Image (cartoon, rainbow, N blue to C red; front, side):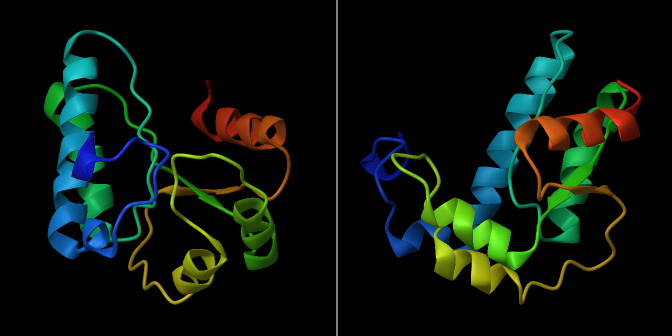
Length: 134
């Protein structure tokens, strides 16, 4: 439990500081490396808005000599706002304000494959499979 909260409890603003965000991304990358080292596949799901966050994810696979498919799922603002506004009990704290704030992010060079995620989960999955050959 992070911050003494259940995964469905809203976290305090301090949970989104740059230092905490860095720690969370490092933890996610570490868990993925351990899964890969054990011979399993790993899917890591986060915003990955910064080039260095994406680089760490790719490096985790490269260190172990396994394939990496960086997929950046994207949908228009209206779709994202509708989705987060319609959530019930969910592990994400993202709401409409967060979705709107994401519009201002400078993603830098995006070398991951951009996937249209505006449709159904099944459509998004099919698009991801098509670009990864899986």
